[in-house]
Length: 240
Image 1 (cartoon, rainbow, N blue to C red):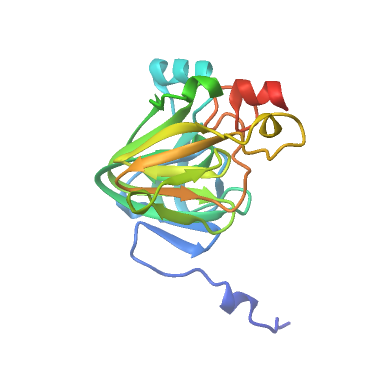
Image 2 (tube, rainbow, N blue to C red; image 1 turned 90 degrees about the vertical axis):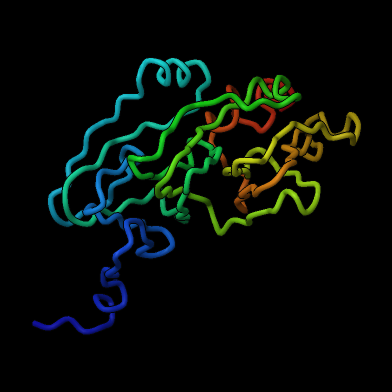
């Protein structure tokens, strides 16, 4: 019997020498020849070769931060030889290479990173952060590859070029050199009650660098916010 059609040619695995590469917009291919990789637990969709998976211990410090803040990511260590394919609910995958640099990213958007990258949960120092119940992100720093997910194609906004504001539920990450504050909408009481604009609290960015915003206000609870599912944390919970 013969199968006709272009299926197995059009979607054939793409050969590349890069440690991290895109098989397509929603599927990350990792070449395990370059060493072990940290990946979000449960993100493996396929592999070829001999790849092993071990749940990564967060350590007491990060475990305590995750329990207190609700932020964090459950990771697994991937070791072995072959090709590893990772994905997360068919969201788009974005790859970057850090060279002695750092980013602040929502924990729900972390897909994978080189084992040479150091990670931790950190509190965002912002004057208005107390109004949201506390803001926390995952910091990734060092030298190596990082893959994150976005719902749709994102936009990278140059913070230095103009005053920059974004909905907390659309912000995925920002680079080192960017400072975030919380801005309260000045549209009056109509912005606060049910049926208002829904844009009461916004993230305001200054400094030098980029903020990455996805075209969907769907950042999951436990991302930027310490508690509460809305972009307003504690205050947002009272106003919904």
